[in-house]
Length: 551
Image (cartoon, rainbow, N blue to C red):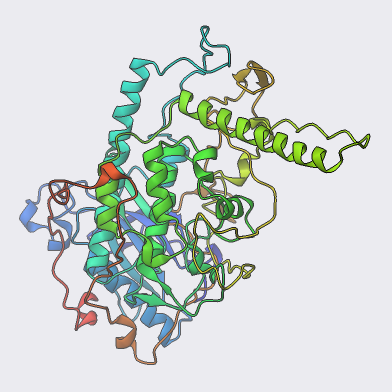
């Protein structure tokens, strides 16, 4: 499908659509295949609510988002894909956590298809996390315990712990809304394949979120369309596989992988890796050490247990969305304390020094009687050595596409097992912790010097948290694309019949898992109920007649 550029899209500001009821008043964003406008309902305020057309009665703000999809130059297959996107979105938009699609206007004499959607004034989740920092608290100051001789910090402050617990509840509730939306889609046989913060819109200052942009959604439970979505959020199987070249991948399991990355975005404001391939330093280290995320991210042990189950290389061993909801709901807390972070780092350094000492002793035993002096173990790398750009959310908005991994591992090792040595070589990234602050002289503990001064940390005030990028246009202005751009060609299988492209699986994906990742997560009273009632908000769609969506 040919991407839309500002030069090929006529400025429609001031135009009216929907029989003159909606006026396009400003530009909200520009995606790869369409332009999104803010539209105002110009119906007279004197008119009663019942005099408004049915598709306008669900929105009391008087504003809508209108997505203008270009029809010019599309062949029949591209046009069928465009209609499939609209069909899948309409089927799923009855859920309260999915952006409602109210109406589609497709006049044969116009070059655009107009898709009328709810307007979310607070922008997307990417902005809410990176720029507004809605789910972040200032890091707890790292204060060494004066009664300790090893440089450990004081126990957590009670007031800070209470504030952190309140923020954890907000994160769990908002993330739960995303899980509700994705589970609803999966129950309909719809798999999003592009779950990321840019495709999640916000209202109520980030307390309510809605899933949007079904441009890459599919009704196929398995797909051979590798590289669909953003490389930051794709599972390794969606990028071709790790141990051997795959012929297809599970679309439901790939959505679950994306949800795991989004959970890290919420908690840490950063990404675990740029792409889940052995070419990525961080992911390569995760393959070598499945406990690596706990060493570089300020997450609680319970969150780490959940992430290990999500980020397994075996898609069939990942939890279903409903299981993931139960586990997240049962999490006692999301963040690690300074003391826990110190103990992880301190313990790792001690283990490394013991290993180096044992290695030096073995070498010394081999050289008995010689004048060779074993080299003392080198000091462990400090937090100063990290490059935040490897993990930040800085380049997410502009990077969306295919990244197929080159298989480098043995085919006899088809999944990630803690007892398996993958033999992957390469440097191990160094962690960044919350008490690193821009412009501050901060202190951390090392084995050699309990009060080693790191100095200035050159990053955002919250380590690893970068501000979002905006898309520049030829006109010189900058606007935000709420649904996120897709800057590369789509990788999709096409059927010669448009109806076949619109067909959907009727059964939901079911990914079984043997046991919860943490013992306390096993519910004693059955499944946790959904916190939001199911409230249909759109007219039911006749799946057998997708043309009924168009007027």
